Image (cartoon, rainbow, N blue to C red; front, side):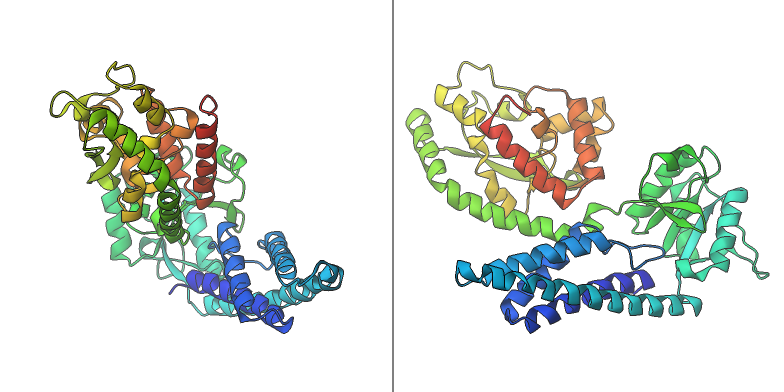
Length: 442
């Protein structure tokens, strides 16, 4: 466990104890206390309160924590009401939860940070490969050697026996960079490129992140990049930007799967009558076989088999695998067109979501024939498969369904992956409902 991981876990533990103690003391009971603690941890996790910081401070996330615990205390007060007349009496109990929480969390976090700083002064730091060239990289490595409070210890070519700092060259080949990181047992990669070298560093950063390394970029002080980025940390005045970890590496990623399972089960239960009516109508018009399976491309290019309502009966084998659009086909009945316009034909894919083949939100799965075709036309298209495919997605909520621009789809899907968050998923779900209720708006 690194000092960073310890700090994040200790921070969450302090929050849990600091809220549970006043809630239990106020007489709300163990069940409500547990629910309140769980809700606070989820809110703080979503708000980035527990994210890794080079130099944590007591003021980090202070307003967010205070707002969350106040909201939770209000909910507890309302939940404990036995009759409306007690509202004025119990409203004062909000302060009996919020004030002790703030005092306990300040004290607890203060103790954690004291322990953390003492450990760093004694040499408990994260081995860091500083990759760069020129005076900027050398000064940064030397600063890390002299200031242990940031928790980064330059390794390998980053320091010599005299305590002076030098740097590992910023190589062109990502494999060479990773080999150096492994050779020196680095746990973090810090890129300190020369002026104008940030674009060249991008490929190196992506490969290092893919290999599991936390990656930081230290652009030139006063450079144009710093003027456009908010929330950057610093090392004695050197701006430092932390590369976003891959979605699968984040603490909130398991919540995406949990949300998929809960909503897929609820969706299958609620939509069962609608599905039954649709299947009866399709059977009357086209006979048996109202469901059909089709191979699509899922995460990392793996084939998956999705389930849909059969609104169209192809004349020859393989027609549905290689034909792009059937919206103008005269063989589509009025009922089938209505189902397709309302996306009712895709309701059975909730079963795929429940199985784990898909997610509720993600890039739309495409047929192998068209994935190969589009990947040749747009080299960014294949990058859409970095996350599980979804029933709905960022591109669809921007009107990119059916016969629309593939380039635009790839760009929006990749933007969704690059900036993924659980809040973005919930936003897309809400927008999807709006698109279904008002099809002309997106």
